[in-house]
Amino acid sequence: MKLMRLGAPGQERPAVRTDDGRVLDLSPVTADIDGAFLSSGGLDRARAAVEGGALAEWDTAGLRVGAPVARPGKVVCIGLNYRDHAEETGAPVPRRPVVFMKDPGTVVGPYDQVLIPRGSARTDWEVELAVVIGGRARYLKGPEDGLRHIAGYAISNDVSEREFQLDHSSQWDLGKSCETFNPLGPWLVTRDEIDDPQSLGLSLAVNGVRRQHGTTRDMIFQVGQLVAYLSNYMVLEPGDVINTGTPAGVALGLPGTPYLRPGDTVELSVDGLGEQRQTFAQA
Image 1 (cartoon, rainbow, N blue to C red):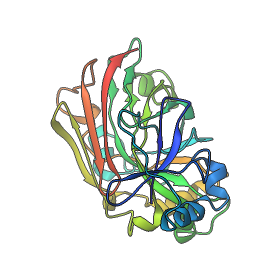
Image 2 (cartoon, rainbow, N blue to C red):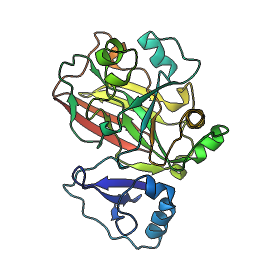
Image 3 (cartoon, rainbow, N blue to C red):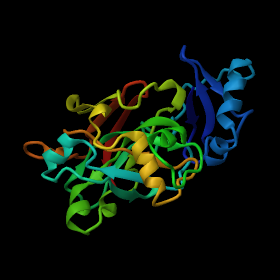
Image 4 (cartoon, rainbow, N blue to C red):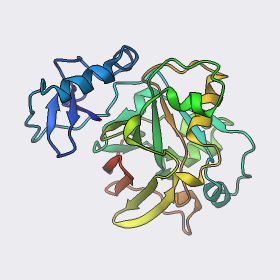
């Protein structure tokens, strides 16, 4: 299934997008797509309602597309998880996952305006595969166990302010947690629709110029491995999001470091997960 949330910020309603492009109102099944829904068999109930023809078609013309999961309890990010990205930034290839946190309040819709922070000169883009946790995960034993705890996948733009990230603190969080810095969606694509999360192409363009083009097969630490690894240091709750890293092609590593400016438009895609588009503006 492809799950969506539609409506104004704070007023989103749940929906299912069918393979033929129709949108069905999921409100009879759940009030929202959140951790409580995911942890209580919500995906099975939604699937049964779709297959049983119990959901009305929804005319969504003019409706905003929100993030496909309600505000997560936490957003956990993996840095430098593609060898070519580590190399372009001049960082050593990590021997263990580089883990940092991102304010959950950064999560916005896939087409929402993104704000360049006041005082920023180095706002950057990062197309990533996002993982949404479906079941409480603690002390998992290995990658296969990690994969079983995933509800689904989505596109994430891990927007970053490099000066804040690299120069203002020994931690990365200041450059990752500015408002609107995590567009997510448009869909939460359930795990059963993605045969292999390590075979997905990722792409990003800025003002029509392609900047990133990679594949998840080049991850240093794979998806199931990351979920299991993190579960040994923190409890992952249903609805939590993991941003799994970005391939080469960010502004930080390009000639001339062409950081984002107000009016720039960024378009992202991941195989099977849809597309995003954001226009940047000054905060």
